[in-house]
Length: 157
Length: 422
Image (cartoon, rainbow over all chains, first blue to last red):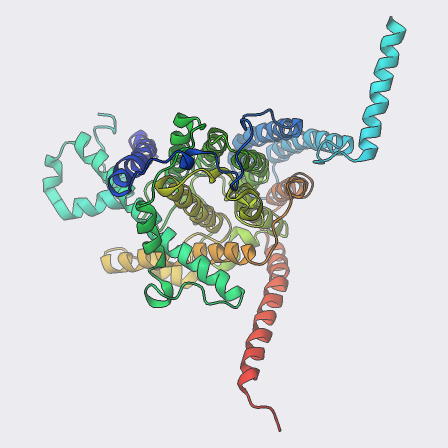
């Protein structure tokens, strides 16, 4: 792959992106504006809640559980991102026939990296953070930990 | 010049771009007269137009197919009035949507509400840059192919959350939050499946991945080792979730959230969401075909060799590209059909079940399968005959089972028409 063709490839992406944006804008604010009727009606602009008048705004705070999911995602997605460079050179480094020393080393490196994260996964699993609704046993563990922390705090005081 | 001054004279580089080559053939020497800064953007624009045409035709066909498949699976007929067996129904629907009023709720965040469909579509459309159709029919073979898919594919979530949040509607907000949770979680097994293929192929590029799987059917990565079925199934499950297809259609669950994050969208804005969803369906299926099913390879070595031997035989080259185009589109369409099949077979699952499947089933299994695949690759570089044979045996069990079920059903229908003995 030469530099020239690489520029061509990525320029393509940029052109596709711009085209997508222009295409959608053209569709929703030019073509359909010409074709569609616009009949103003006060009732039409209300928030749709199956006929009930909506109560309050829906811009509310989210459940904490979504943040847990986001944190778990972050850890494992970063892991995957770190492994991409490893995966792409693995074929070159593993040696042609029957595992060279470099190949074994490269494999073990990634295996240890994955193992550490796997231990983390098991930890989170045991703590019950992967469950959408924490099981009562996991909640008991939480309560016991909290008691222990409070007890320590009392001692310190 | 941004595209490099020697671009036009460099035949080898040039030959990779089918469209450019075709225009070169059309114009011949006169091509040199057009300055590069006009020619190349024009070529790219032509590529965009071809792809937008493809997406539109695919969406029209797939929506009709979905309705027909669902109808026949429920012993109904589906659309029958417009055109042959309702084939023109989707076009009529599209025209109807063009004439629909655009309603923005009074309390909505107008700007975000307007931007959301743009971002959703712009997050799917550039993926077609790397989706290959045959050796010569592809927009461009980016050297970061799969990585590009993983990166750009994630943009869609932003648009979905934006749509849900901006609508200021409780249905939409719930839909958007569910979408965000699900799309984000399923990116991990998806990424691990990408990793497995990348370490087998030693390249990100889609075309390289396909070239690695040429030859006999047993060269397909699907049959590489006994762990590949795990990778394939988790990739397919994750891709269902990424497309928000049933049984993972929580974000737009019609029966509980009206239609989730696009409840407050109407007319053209709504149809853009729909178009993006169907485009994404084709993209994930084409990528699955490239990663596991040998891409455009027919799986018959002599045929492939015969097609590839096109030196001084332009007709053979045309034939080869046509065959490959048909093969890859057939494979992708088969996977699209499986997606529809699953939609009308399985009930929708709950959000806690979605998280369970992703984090406690797919994630550990894909991790183990990936490490196992790299270990196998280390011991037997390029694969092992015994392991491949074993994998084919593993795959043939569910396949034969399905075939038997279909056969039983067909025989059952046939027997209905045979008069009974008495």
